Length: 311
Image (tube, rainbow, N blue to C red; front, side, top):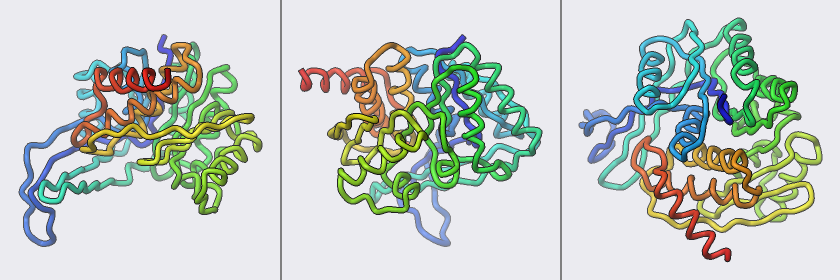
């Protein structure tokens, strides 16, 4: 059985391409497209697999795009459990503008899931994660799924005795009240969750620790983009410097960070080392174009460089 089971409630067929310039009205002539299976938890499973770990990706999918997800995950050798749904899986479209170096990301909402389909997702998670060490939920919720769905996943994890890792935003984050082992909000998501600006590190730490004291999560890792990250527990915190790399695309960087943190913990790393492995994976994904995720050799090189600096 896998160490890590991921759930992606709103998966996507990711399409990436490039164009000289993105302009209104005129046809935008694009380069050859790249197709990848996408969505937060699917990306997490892909990165765990890339780094030599064992993960199962669970997701609801339907229609031609859902069929394409199956084929692409088979292509990449990622074990997966598809939950059939009536609606068609969404597509997401990313265009890199060669002239400016800017990236344009077009994200569709996804199909509406019925109550029966939602219940089947929870049942499938409970069955597939019975012997896992971690359940990871990452990404948005599709139409029709109530904002407290991830709380229901947390409750499943608690019943199974499995640690739950969560990376989400908006109302889905606000409605998750307990049962999370590790929460990874971005600074924007933490601001939205608390309703405060959180301009200083002290304010960020206090906000993260507030979630811990309220019983939402045992550990909070706040990603700060180009400013690095902050690791917060009940009794301590640490500011983590960013890993400087040339940036080609930000798609999947947060998911890669979550994947490597979870894999590191599953392999027995201490929390600090696992978070640094996550930062290395996130940085390595920034180096890849379009919807591509990190390469194992880049992650290992960046992590080893940090270990040398840390002594």
